[in-house]
Every structure is written in structure tokens, then in C-alpha cells.
Image (cartoon, rainbow, N blue to C red; front, side):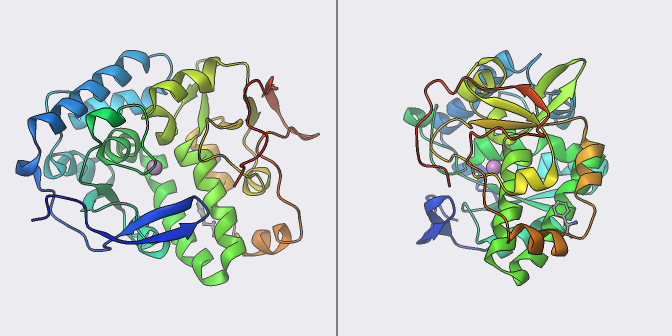
Length: 296
Ligand code: PHE
Ligand code: CO
């Protein structure tokens, strides 16, 4: 049983240099978690649950409770899986960390969500560059209890396998879609904007920034607009895209992307902070504090 993550090699991706880990599925080494590890989970869990009511969408909060995630201890994947299988047929599988793209897509297409087994260290509470157990489990897993979102994630995996065969430009479009929905998406609810993106709900600073700061743009979701938009990996997002509901997201992504990828390959990408004519603008960002370059 591995007590430390097994890195395979660093790889240059569209997210910069990231460690790519062993691709195999592993049993969650639950009994190897230290008191410190459980403490990190408890601290982050309590901190996020204090700020997320009224900020995260209700589906996220309700599902997290329904699955039985609590601050008490790092959840056991097996126990979460009982709730998840019953609700939507998804299951969690333990992994060492970020997977090669095709392997990741194949898991999603089979309704398996890879979860990093290890948790960040106490000095990394506010930021770490790669996904850990807190990001994956707290951030991504609850919405897999939602039937529409669960189907979207599987369709995304199937689309990923297809895009991987088409080529790098197609994959880039799909990665931007994931980034601006699954990781950093906002949703309209009860006449206000709420968070559903995992990258936001697992970050205290961005949970507040994305809704309350005057700096970022908040723009209505439009598929091709999103697929053309570059993004930030080292700062808060300059732009957040807002869906009306999960059904809108599922319907917008139902068409065959093959001709869309071909058409978009002829068009230029859009800088992360730009607002275009035709955008449905909820808020035009002030741009305060934005770094001038560094969009990926
Ligand atoms: N409809 C997309 C395709 O044909 C698949 C997909 C669905 C991609 C949902 C992303 C999200 O490739
Ligand atoms: Co993530």
C-alpha cells in the first residue's frame, strides 16, 4: 500500500508542467491517514461549509449532506459509493493524482470518477497547484448525485475519448468547456448567481471572489464562446460563465462536436478577460488586479 504518491513523470500540458501519476486504480489507503490528514479535511470542510450556504447552488449542498460527507473524518470511498451508486450509478475510484487525459475520459465515460487518495499538507490549506482529495471529493463528487449533472459528466467523458482521437485543437476546446463549467461554473438560482464549479467550491478565496468581486466578468454560457476562451491557471478567473440550469448545459452539449471543432479551428481564441458584442453580460468586470498576461 502506497503511503506517498507515486509520481511517474512531469508532463507539459495546457495547464503548465504537472506531475502525471501512475494510471492504475488503487484502493483508498484509509487506515494510513494520519490525525493531521483528518484535521486538514475537518478544517477545510468546516471553513467551506461556513461560507457556501447562499453561495453554492442548493443541489451541491443538499447532495453533500445526503452522501454523508461530514467534517469528522476523511470519508471512506466505499461508503460514499453506496449513496452514489444508488442515486446515479456513479462510483469513485482511488488514484494517485492527475491522470493522462485519455485515461481520465475513459473513467468518466464509464461513470467512474477518479479521486486523488492523498490530502494536502496543513501549510497548503489555501492553495496547491494540483488536485488533492479535498478538491476532488468535496468539490467534484456531490454533484454526481444529481441525475442531469451525472449524465453531463458521462457525456463529457465520451466526448473526450472522441476529441482525443480528433486531435489537439478539439481537445483544447473540450478542456476549456470543462474548465468553465465543471471547474469554474456559475448557475442562476432563486434570482441570483450561485456556484457549482468544483474549483470554486473547494477554494475559500475564489468562492467569495467569483460572486462578490467587481473584478471578473460574469457572462451567460454559450458553447462556442466558451470553447474559444482562454483561461487562468495561476490566478482567479477573469471571466465566469453562467448557466440557467443543468438541463441547459446538457442540451447545449448534446450536438455532435465534430463540425463545431472544425469551424472553431478557423477562429482565433478569445483572451480570458475580454467581453464581446453579443455576450449576455451579468457583470462587466472592472479588471482590477488582473495580471496582463498568462492566459493559457
Ligand atoms: N456532444 C459532444 C460531442 O459530440 C460530447 C460532449 C457532451 C462533450 C457533453 C462535452 C460535454 O463530442
Ligand atoms: Co477538478
